Structure formats: structure tokens, C-alpha cells
Image 1 (tube, helix red, strand yellow):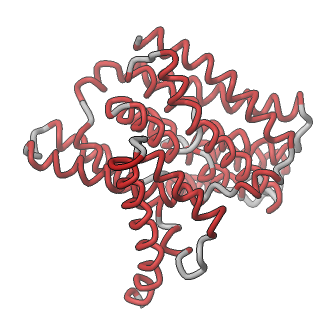
Image 2: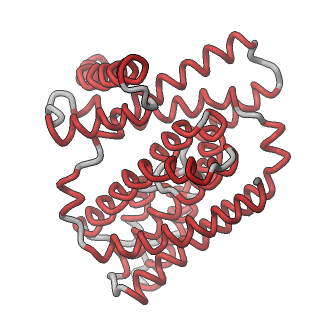
Length: 336
């Protein structure tokens, strides 16, 4: 059974490996553009021009796992002492803007654009925490319909693509310090993949700070999912919710790869890895990111984005612009 499952994934994995190789060659020998951005572009072309073959789809869909493994390995390069020095302020920014983002999207969705409650909650969780993963995580708790989930996912993917393209350009125009760009993108962009891609497209240090900041948001996915489940269960008084069930749901939604990142970073800070080991791990996560971003690009379907209603787009756009400006100013004030 295991052998059959692996063989089913191999063709798609070969496709994204090939795409990563093409992005690398184009970056180094032809275009001179950051290879991670090119990897996303290769995936977009594959999905929207060629089409992902049915036989490759299962393997291509593993791109999130490659990204998670890469993030774990990246722990070996994180400057733990520097993180600890600014940790309290970074945590305050993460938690503060996460809460603000949730409330802002809920308010704009219900009070301004009259978006249905459940769709507004999906958008709020998706924007505030970690994109599509958060939408899926809270969908059962809010009793969302399949069309509402599809609208929320399409909206999130549209802004993932837009921010991935725009953020590095803004960072260059403003000449932002690496740490400011990393924290800003980690707080105000949406999904983990685009955050990591934008950060490393800007610089190695910016990529590390963007990833760490984004992971700080990701760990709240379970908490947010449980809070929404409690809220809708209490509001509708259907009596099918229990504290034990919700706590189990919280643990199930917790991004376990974050623990791996923390363990590797801790081991590196204790001197477990030699300089050669660290160099190998760094090379490893860079290639894992390259392959993962090809798969990420295949999730950007232009036709689906065209069919997304205008109201969800306006809701997230309003929140994105507000949080982006405020978090940029806050990041410059604290880390600039």
C-alpha cells in the first residue's frame, strides 16, 4: 500500500523538480531574476497555459510538505540570540496585528460590504492567520457552505499572487532594511509560501525574518479555529460542541512543522551543527523552497480569480491596505 501511494506521487514530484531546475537555469544563465520568483512563474504557466496533468496532480500537491520541511531546516540558520533580543516586541506586533486583522475584516465584511457572516469569518481567518489553511481550518466550525469556502479560497489566492509580486518592489523603492521588510511582510501578507518567497526574493536575512514572523502567526491557527467554532456553536445553540472536542480540534490544527523549526533552531544555537552541517542544511532548504514554489505557482488559477465576486475582494483589499500601512510604520518604528 505504501509503495503504491509513493509511486502515485513520484510523477508529480518529478514535474515540480523539473520546474525548479528550469527556474534555476533561467535565473543563473538567462534572465538574472530571483529564482524563487521564477519558480512561482513556472508553476503559474504550467497551471494556466499547459494544465497540470491528472497523473501529476497528486505529486504536485505535495508542495506544501516540501515548504514545511524547508522551513524546519531553515531553523539552523536563524540567529536565535537576535530573535530573543527582539522577541517580546515581535510577539506584541504579531499578536496585536493578528487580532486587529480579524476584527477589521469582520467589521468591513459585515458592516460595510454586507458580506454573509460565515463568508466574512472565513475571510477574516484566512487573512489574519495563514491563508487557505486557516480558511479550511475554520470552515467546519463556522458551518460554511462549499461555495463560501471556494469564494474565500479564490480571494486569498488572488491576493497571495498580488502581494508576492508587489511587496519586493515596494521594499526596494522604499529601501527598507532587511529586518523591517521581513517583519512587515510576515505580518501583513497572507499565506506562508508567498511570505517566504517574497522575503527571500528581497534578501536572505529578510527571508529568515519574514518566515519567523509568519510562523508566529501560524501557531494561532488552532486557537482561531476553536474560537470560531465556540462562537458559532454558542450563537446557534445546537449543543453538539464540547470543550474536549474543541481542544482536540485545536491540537489537530496546530502546524506541527513549527515545532521542528524550533527544535532545529535550538539545536543550532547549542552548537550541535558544525559550519559544514549548517551550510548543507542551508543549501537543502533553498532547494526545497525552489521546488515548493513551483507547486505554489500551480495553485494560482487565473480563471478562478476572474470569477471571484467583487465584495470579498474589496473586504480583503481594505484590510490589506490598512494592515500593510500600519504594520510597515510599526516595523520601521521598532526595527528601523
